[in-house]
Image 1 (tube, rainbow over the protein chains, first blue to last red):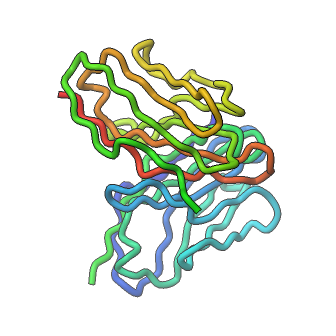
Image 2: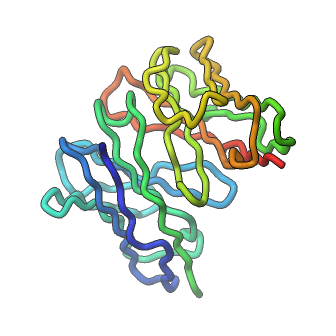
Length: 116
Length: 115
């Protein structure tokens, strides 16, 4: 069975500083990986996805993530955060055809706090 | 385009009552997923459907939970009888299983409180 670990429950970053959120996965085959963001009282919005090919994937809102098979990691990065980036971030792994036909396994989330 | 639509957004009811959560997937999507989010357990997959057929319900916590998808545009998640430990946010998501590399799109959730 697959699993996802997000080691950081909370992260505080100053506005304008760079950001990296960590994600480690466990899955026996080629994983399909996702990052979602959740604002308070809202659903989950897809930031980016990795299925195959280039290991550095670009997403919305200036986010990117890098898939490193040797480290079983899929860390999320942003060069300069904005106050509006404060939210809960979830890493997820999917099986089968890439999450479209199979359920996702989520990490517990990282709560991002932006300080002025 | 309309996203995944869930209703109600909030539900407060007393223990023992029947609760029905509703979901309308994105038009054209043929996979539908129900997730539950709690502080203790995070986001958990409860059940999912492909082409209206339940594929995996191993995440449904107890027989008190049931889900149906009578047609491609509607699904329900029912809890009967409800208990305080069922309090959570329930999310519905949809995707296209016919096209490769398609992510899931989530609704805004139903926040359920069982008193």
